[in-house]
Amino acid sequence: MRKPTIAGAAAATLLALLLPAAAHATPAAPAGHAGRLVVRTDRGLVGGKSAEGIHQWLGIPYAAPPTGKLRWAAPRPAPRWSGIRPATSYGGRCAQLASGNGPRVDNENCLYLNVYAPSGHDRGLPVLVMIHGGGLTSGAGDQHDGSLIVNTDGIIVVSINYRLGPFGFLDVPGLGTSAKTASGNFGLLDQEAALRWVQRNIAAFGGNPAAVTIDGESAGGWSMCALMTSPPARGLFRAAIMQSGSCATQTRATAQTASLAFAKAAGCPDAATSAACLRKLPEQTLLSASSSYQPLFTSGGPELPVPAAQAVASGRYNRVPLLMGTNHNEGRTFAQGFAGYTQAQADQLITSEFGSRAPAILARYPWSSYPSPYTAAYMIGDIWTDSGFLTGIGGCPEQNLATQFAATTPTFFYQFDDLHAPGLNHNDPGYQWGAGHAMELAYLWPSFNNGFSLYDLLTPAQLELSKQMVRYWGAFAAGRAPEVAGQPLWPRYTAGGKLMSLRPGNQTRTISAGTFAAEHQCTFWNAA
Image (cartoon, rainbow, N blue to C red; front, side, top):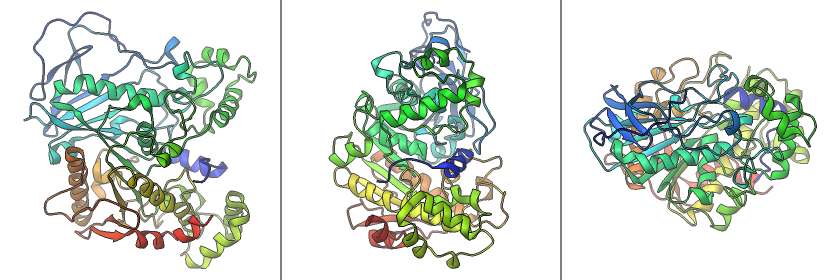
């Protein structure tokens, strides 16, 4: 796999896309379940609401606020509270700069999760835990309202926040408060803490802690591989869904170089004192200095002893059933920022990224084969898609990863093939997004939007695809295989086998691995 780095303008494009209660003993109260709106958790009672035909508990703290001395520390238990804590609105998002995922947020008190459950079931339901994307720099659990999935599939959905950017992923020497946090994967530790909360508490909401499936897209997809290869996460879930993800990680040396560069930008240039200096800075200063900081999971610590890709290749990972896939035109979402490039500028960009291979690549993806006026974006987007240039997302690396997983665990592979899915913005009228990165999300989560409702733009044929996808995802969460009566049979993936092509208008069908490889020119890319 290509070294997981994101260069200059590409990083900028990627980034553009992505109060504690008092501690008291809990009074005696009857144990809650999904049929009641007051539920007992291990920290106290929470009162939810009925909405969208289901029960919802929003903004439940799964860990203590990571502020003050707990900034850059492993998550600690949330304080206990007395009485009934309202759980009817989302908790604050984690600190993040403005992006396609929303406005700037200056907030460190953000370790909250949300539970969505059917109103008519009491116990033993499968659970789907969604981990949001956003390049590990933006996004939040409130983008993934689980109501559509709950109403359709009769399962429980949980969505979470986790620390982002330099608050969640920073490896400055001396910054971690223990050996457990020495490699700076605080956001990953948050995810694992949320999954432990689910293990302890989901039965009270009607869920089965032995039937937890994790799901994540983009950076959430990176998280799937990280969690599958993280020893402390073993036993916290029984299946995983990886949407447009990869097993990209970085070494500690790479992480520390980037982290010290961030510290310098924040006003802490002395490596020997950077950790102490950073701890004194206010949140706003740290966030403002992070515009060029692109985090990634770091291997070498107890939570990720070896690079995730290495663990998968060797078979040394948590071998749970996996549903994974990619979008047909992943790179076009990121390449939109290059829509105005001339041919010379586009050629120069590809040369800077691929070096001596650039002439052969440009011959394979000739300028003349793409329509105007956004020729550069289409060409760059297709190159990035097929090569998986952006941290292994897309095309050939996705197929290679699916083949690796399939050798050691039940794997179900898909390609999202709605080539007319609603675009994520209206910045370039007539831009052909194809099935770009993140564009499948609205089909599963109507609450996912980029300032306007993408779900409301779906045609009747696309709404039918949405129903199919929701049923496949629910069936996988319930039985660890996407088997749905009345829908095309989704075969288990094998090397050279078949994958599911998700298409609108009841056109979903299987395609061969060879067809997928030809679409993405994998013979060419795999020869590198």
